[in-house]
Image (cartoon, rainbow, N blue to C red; front, side):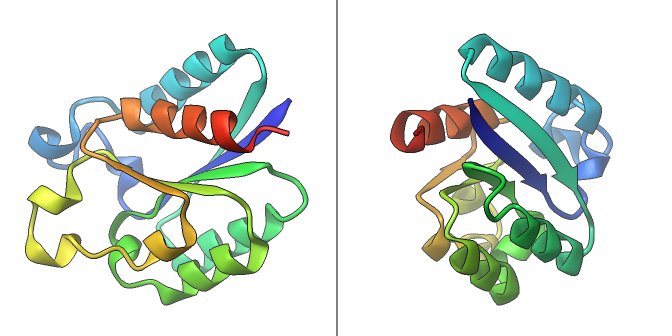
Length: 146
C-alpha cells in the first residue's frame, strides 16, 4: 500500500469561501472527502491530509513524513512563490512530491508564475481544479509505487 501525504498550505482551509470564481465552491472538507474516495478506488493507495496556514508547521510535517510516507502531494498556496524553506525541507527528505494548484498559476498575476518549490517536485499540476489532486496521486502511484 502506497502512503501519500496531502499537504495544503495557507488559505486552503477557506476553499468554497475564498474567491469561488477562481478556486470553486467546493469546501476543504469536501476536497478531502473527494480525494479520499478517489484514492480508495485505486485500491493500493492510502492518503492522509494536513493543512496549515503556518510555514513552520508545513516544514515540520514534511520532515515528519521522512520514512513514513512514499509520496507527498503539496499545494503550498502562496508559499509556492517564495518559500525556500519549504523547498529545502522537500530536498532534505527526498520524498517524491507532486506540486498541485487548483487554479492555473501561469494564467494569473505575474508573481504567481514562479514556483520556487518546483525544483524539488517531480511534477507540477495546475489549473485542473480539485481533480488535480487525484491526477497527482495517480502520477506518484504510476511512477514511484514500490
